[in-house]
Length: 370
Image 1: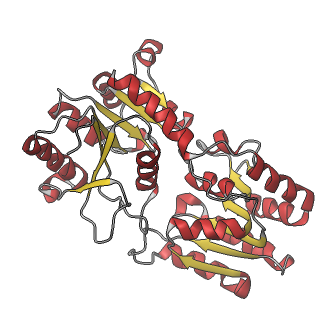
Image 2 (image 1 turned 90 degrees about the horizontal axis):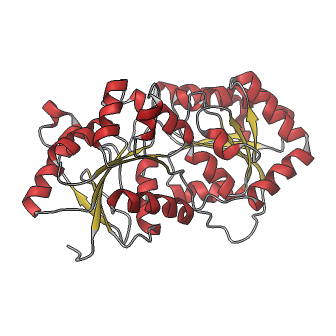
Image 3 (image 1 turned 120 degrees about the vertical axis):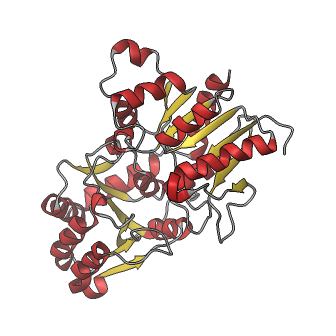
């Protein structure tokens, strides 16, 4: 154990804290741990892993306690609580990522330690946050709540009275994504869609649009990168539908399956266009940031928290469906001035680096701990 004051960060059970297989939450947590300047040592807790964790970061693997009874997330929480007692740990802050019910349990069981909840999604869709009563309990009993977008913050505060909002220790802490490129990249006539291949991400609608439009532009091609889960996931029926949709495009289209983030960034750096075609209320799309970080002309949709970062930097589809996405793709492929404008703005106006993200969250942590 370090002699420095420390913060414990607890991941959702599904997250793999590894460079090769990290989901969105694990990626954000690793970025925060790498870029923090708070002075606190960071300890990340999660499931047992079969591959190497993020280098130079402190990861502690736990086995969920009675998962058949508690479920994996609460089982992990109970194991963490037991670990605290056994190791006589007293962190300055326990930071729960993405699980309202876990934050509630740990706040009840560890009432002598400050507990915060980091919201990565709409809490009204989560166990422990669906009702106004549950969210008011969190607001009154947690030391702090981080929201990754104004949209997510407003979801948490939905139906709160003005005085309840004023008393809620909630902080807007927008996401960041690192730009690793040092100069403006040379772009190819490639379109990238990098996402989990699930219905809410709008991948099939985008595939329908591309099947319609790309034959008109034979010098362009598309790569769809991702899977339903991670590298060890089985192919879903939805993924099969996407593959079948783009098959008629032959050499103009490729579905790569899951790739680690480093390889996704390599592909984005080469691609002229990225599409983030979400059809649900996306809380705060990291895919939007990764596209802009790599200097891509971006097509995305006006849902959830996406416009907070994409407004003025992307071609935004108002009502996402295959027809509107097809119109957007055609406009960008046929109007070279529009394409150049979006490429320029993506490269010249990118304030969303990880250091800025960590600075904002460090400031919120300081207020909570003090």
